[in-house]
Image 1 (cartoon, helix red, strand yellow):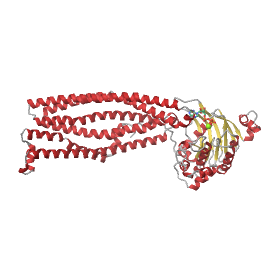
Image 2 (tube, rainbow, N blue to C red):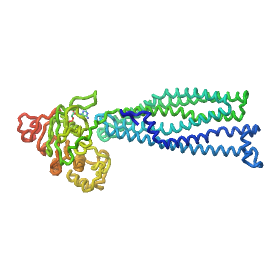
Image 3 (cartoon, rainbow, N blue to C red):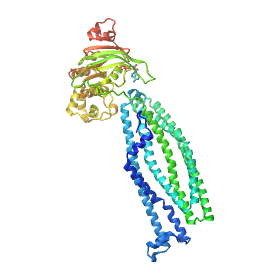
Image 4 (cartoon, protein in one colour):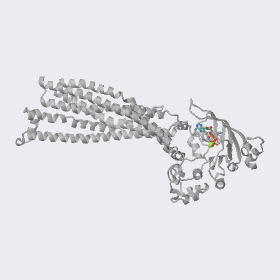
Length: 602
Ligand SMILES: Nc1ncnc2c1ncn2[C@@H]1O[C@H](COP(=O)(O)OP(=O)(O)OP(=O)(O)O)[C@@H](O)[C@H]1O
Ligand SMILES: [Mg+2]
């Protein structure tokens, strides 16, 4: 549906619709039959006026004479049979109309499902840098409201306008057959009336856009506030934040009020314009009865057709509102599509295959957050670091030095501006990011947990046998805690894991990592929330697990640092010291000694 640059066009959407050839054909056929049932309706009863009431027998009575015995003939038969025929035709038109709408709705829903799937696939590739500024509310509104507007247009509007066009053609033919002078007058003036109403419709287009933007802002503010309701309530700041949301609600009020009354005014104005036309046509029809061969019955039929045309004309006018809304929605969806994507690295070489673990090295790595042209201060300024296969390296340094940033780059969550990351000598640009993430596991200081069971939070969608889950929990020092929960592995952890303590959440993350059985392990402040005793137990249990796996431990606490074979000291985006704990301690005036020397002596 989208072109090479990822932008959606109506042409592409049309192509997607056309793939449902059979359904479309059937829908069109049904529309045609619906029209055949509906169009003769206004003609039938009025013809009785001429033939029965004004006593000018014509084709209708001739037909009845042929169909029914002579004894039945008379006004009762004529009126009764025409009434029955009229009601039957109406019923058929109704049933066919429902069937036709169903056909087009199914096609529209299939196409919108494709758009939603397509967008979800893109979301998977959007770069992390874009996610930082993108609110969940914005994305949600694209997925819900905007795709909904396109769905509306494709389904309801297109289906209705098709019948509308068929009906108008049918009516034109009948009018031409009845009285071609009058018909030409009506058919020529009608487009003028429609054109006028369309112009009125265009005036409210931009108002709809503002209303949608207001809804988006409101959704975003409300979502963010609800996500952080815990700290907000704890800080007694609910009134402030909810007032902010209320402000956004006010914006909705003013924008949607402006849109609602003006679009209503436009609709009424269009309708009145139509009524003006309608009344003029009625007047002309009466003249035609007086001065030409139009019969009274035919005149009443023309009145009927004028009313009959009202619905299709309104629907054709309505489709342009619907198209405007859908077109604006497509524009917003395209803004989402224009976001930067993660770079794609081909799977040229897999350094992990057949190995228990791999070495990790970083060469002259430079990085700053942000997207061109809004790149911030450099965070990494030429990092050089090598961790041998199976080695445990601790990375220490002041808060804000860039340690976690380095971790994000190791996982390919952000691309470096310069330099290279290698796993067993193979640059990550030649491995493929999915392969790297499959084998390198991180445990972060704060863990993202889903409002789901312990089991689901451990497996993240992968199925593991219970024995594996319990083993991982044992290593993470969480076995007893989970066993004590009433439902064990099937207990719910609450939104963001609120039913667990901070330390329990960290240990759950460690268990998740153990379960993934990675070849390289990165622990970024993974045990910072644990008490000294639990931490010691965890390190002891992890020791066996980490045996023979390259490990990067980022920590502030000496107890965690001491687990490592070697230490690298990070400062202002660079590695400034490296060595064993003892070597670094011995270095007079070194940063490591400044960070940990006091602890050692004290
Ligand atoms: N997503 C981001 N966008 C912009 N700047 C960021 C982002 N994440 C971190 N930074 C900045 O990058 C710098 C390094 O942050 P980083 O998280 O890497 O530090 P750290 O060494 O892990 O610190 P700590 O020990 O406190 O965890 C900080 O100045 C921070 O403000
Ligand atoms: Mg950090």
